[in-house]
Picture 1 (cartoon, rainbow, N blue to C red):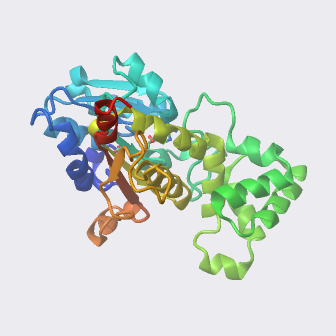
Picture 2: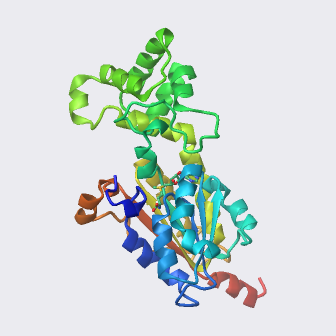
Picture 3: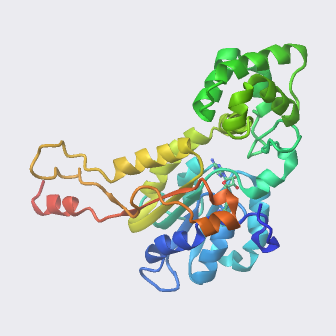
Length: 338
Ligand SMILES: C[S@@+](CC[C@H](N)C(=O)[O-])C[C@H]1O[C@@H](n2cnc3c(N)ncnc32)[C@H](O)[C@@H]1O
């Protein structure tokens, strides 16, 4: 999607805002970032990472990605910073293990965490990986090519209710049952092997009036299959609490989500993190129950029109950010011997 080869196939989204939100935590002790650690949980093509490493010549960056092809690109792009960069091939829900193996305490040692969710432009552009409904390719969609389950396995083997459930839950597809019935009928004759065959079926399964209004008829089904193949929502649900645990006091986390199911998970986990656990109605905060985080954003922030024109992939983005706050109540409890 990015036209500039300097983007390594992927233009980083809301880059200036990510810099503005994370830098105060990364440069708090030293203005060049020395002593600070940034975890880029979705390092991808290394666009965001490159900017932080350039701006902060003392910063250490730990970059995670489950896609080995993305890590190869990040390694090439970030090679000039190699003494300050650790790249780890892992799912982001294994952030604690990745930190421990990189010599960082998984609890309270990291100054910044960035999640830029979903697929990269370069994954979409690598047609043979089957993420894009616009190109005919094997029905694959695995972010990590070593995992066993492909999109073809799902459409060819899951029973009709399970298929409908995936399409409804992960694609918010209102014709889920109809599409599932069409899939099961067609595969009994010929199993699916390519994205093109599935797209063709979706044109038949979705009624013509809905096809004219609801965006590309394959969009929601492809999103649903990608989420199911990669276990994306469960991975995110586990990763965010672990990322919050990893932050030191005053450390900051920024998350960029591109579809509503992921953004809802971010919103719910962030809301719980900034909410007191003292029962409502009590006049004072119970020890250990005060929120450990404060929100740095009001609702979700979006890309502006200029960025969307430059990089259409930024159109659906929703950014949310938190900062860890000191545990005053814990100190008070210690003072009172409680
Ligand atoms: C939108 S791209 C990140 C782009 C990056 N910020 C840049 O500027 O180049 C998202 C990346 O997250 C990776 N990813 C998605 N889900 C993941 C997961 N559960 N664990 C680890 N990496 C994941 C994808 O492989 C992809 O490379």
